[in-house]
Image (cartoon, rainbow, N blue to C red; front, top):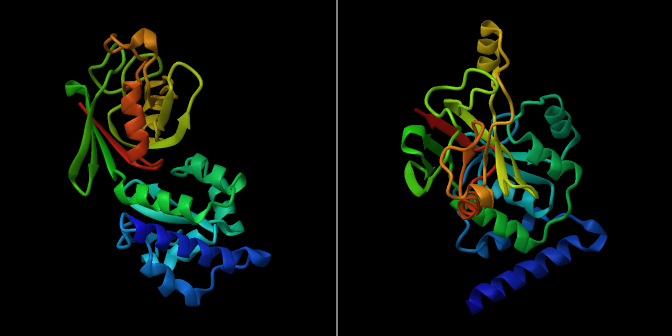
Length: 263
């Protein structure tokens, strides 16, 4: 513990001396010094992809993060680097359906410089995060997975008409298929915390158009109000977890993670 503390203190001092004066960037020649004292709970083998799909190894993106010039976000099964550049921002703003758009926009438009400790805490959380979420509606069960292995399991509640795929607005059904979780939000209302589910996608909208119905919007994974703690299948088609399970979900899942909702 003492060695770890001294290492972190040394890195903080290194970063302070490199960046505090005139907001200088961390010099690239210091990367070997940085690599030697990365906390043990950070997986330095994680590979990211940039906006062009190029693979980036830890040594290639760590300085971007330490210089507060970008963030990591998840795009279904892929981790990507979002650089805080005009090109990156313009590209994001052109696509209203971009994965993790809300979270990325917040980081770009309202970003505050992170400390070394905050950056390392974020990297440690990413190292342990789930890469997929699977829901079996008939089991009323949600599974968090990482590299094919189960991290944890939650019991869930669905809508008042839980059997079958969602067809239209107001049918009280949860959609079935592969979507992604977005807009990770702490709330002040009865739902406690929530993720948006990316329903309806283009296929859902096309199907609703053929049926001449509205597909419905606002499907979420959210918490449970005190009045609903003992209720079963009480939502309008959302997936409800107990509030302590939502806390665990938030600690393991990033915006942009895929959710596979099965019958």
